[in-house]
Length: 160
Image 1 (cartoon, rainbow, N blue to C red):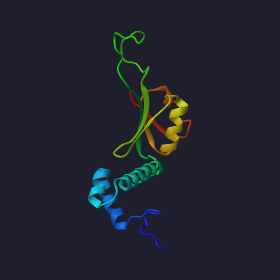
Image 2: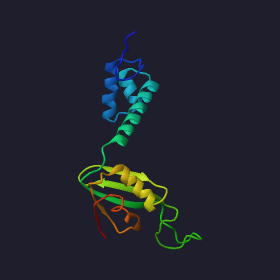
Image 3: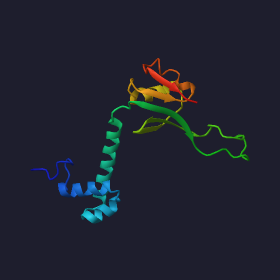
Image 4: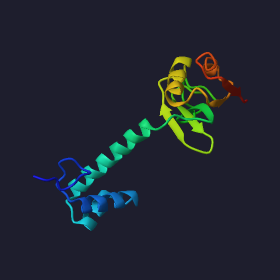
C-alpha cells in the first residue's frame, strides 16, 4: 500500500493538506484555526503542529557552531529584593534568581540557556559545544571566562 504523504511517516493526511498545515504554521495561525481552514480534526492539527515544533527544536540544536566575532555574557533573572522582607536585605544581588548564559554571534544568531550556576566548568562546556575555536570571543571581566585561552580559543578580549 502506497503512502499518502512522503513528509509524515504513517500520516493519514494527504501531502496537500500537510503542506497547507505547514504554510499556516509558518503564518503563525493557531492549530485550531488551521484545522478549521483545512477541514482536519483539531487533534490532528495540534499533533502535527507539535511535531513541527519538535523538529524545529532539533534543527536549532544541530545548527552550525558560532564563528566570527562572538559575545558571551551571563545574566540573572528574577524579582528584585524588597526592603521589608526579612533576611533578604537591601539592593540587587543574585540570590533567588535564575542564571542564564547567552552567546551572540555579531550580526547573526543568539543562543540562550538556563544554567545551574555560572562556574567556569559550566560555562566552558557550553562555549566548547557551541563556538568554533577560531572565533574571536568578547566577554566582560567575569572570572569564569579565565580558562577560555587555555581551552584552545586563541582570541579572547575582555571589555568592562
